[in-house]
Image (cartoon, rainbow, N blue to C red; front, side):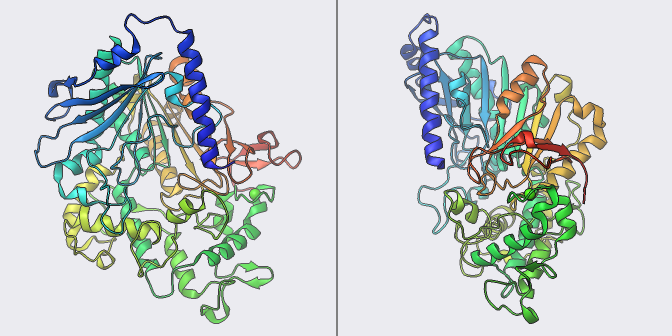
Length: 564
Ligand SMILES: [Ca+2]
């Protein structure tokens, strides 16, 4: 089923459910129309927000079929800084809960508040249809409608030249938006939210972990998918990879990525017990597969003599770039945030942007190696994502200098920009390992990551989880945090295994009913639509039992360790 069709189906389902629940609801004391209209031009005083602003105002309040769509603006203290624009959708039949959605990349646009949580279930009502008040903001800057040619919205970092806009992006906008939303919810319904959840992926995953670390009193639960938690450390690794791909002849075109993927499947697919097109025993694959010695269809993957002899093999320059991509960056010296390194990526069995017919493939390619080498262009969607991100981060966030040559900056030492980069790392590396304040009030976290993510390394989230357990003890962590991995799932979308999981219900059950998640199932909506797998907690992975339908989770068990 196409993404578009799923989205339409989800929207239709959501609307039907909303209409049904609205019909059942008791008549409110005021009509939804008038309650919504009363919010127009409503001011939110600066005094109710926990960080400095010049106050907020509702710029429009429109009664839709079954919810009030509120658009608002939180003014910056610095008159030259952009406002925070937000949307707050207030359902007519409210479940007394707030859900905030995180952003992605450099943010700059308001997330779809009538949409789903990341990797959410396509066959269940969206949060707004479940009765949530849903809020999201652009985090304090607006991606240009006509982006800096030829960048696309969300990949333009010029906003960072303003310090308040940058502070908003690094987290302050999250607190201000939450507080404005809570105030408006009180205005509309007469009470504040009984429970508040945050859900996001990538930058939004960093934001999910950040809000419960910095403002634990505000939140009851968080869903963090593929979190860019140590954001500056990640960007520096991204720079190291971008530089490696910019070396002469190092970039792999889409057909070569097919070749690499097929060779890796040949070596690794069955290490998990079944040739299903998914490398589920990732640790064994990482230990076994080496592109320099691998074989595909009886021939070496490495081109004869190491030269580039076409799409059926990889040159030595390409194999060198893959080695950089799959190994850590070690900072010299460590970042001021305390981060000493950032791990490499699981490349083998991952989709680096293959030449493949799939509705999500243009997104997969744009978030991986792109369609042109990094030296030829820095256009988002064309160049490798790592190259675009590195260029934007260095020029507009690290150097405050649009003429700075990003490829010339050594990400290991940070060169002349070290002081500024390290200052940013202290905020943007959301790396606290003690969540006691949040855990002790009953807060819960669901963290998840695809093992085939080539933009935010899955290994990095594994390291963070291990560090949290070392700080707080495994038993304590068990009381409030789960970390799941999904083999075959990449960054945000995947043509191999496009994860779909009802994380919000799992979180509700844990927070509101004390029922910890167990035996969770994840579905694929793209690779083999409708197939399921057990959602395994790291370090477990789904192993085929040796019999039964390979498309059914029941035929798999979560196991630990390398069985081969
Ligand atoms: Ca397999």
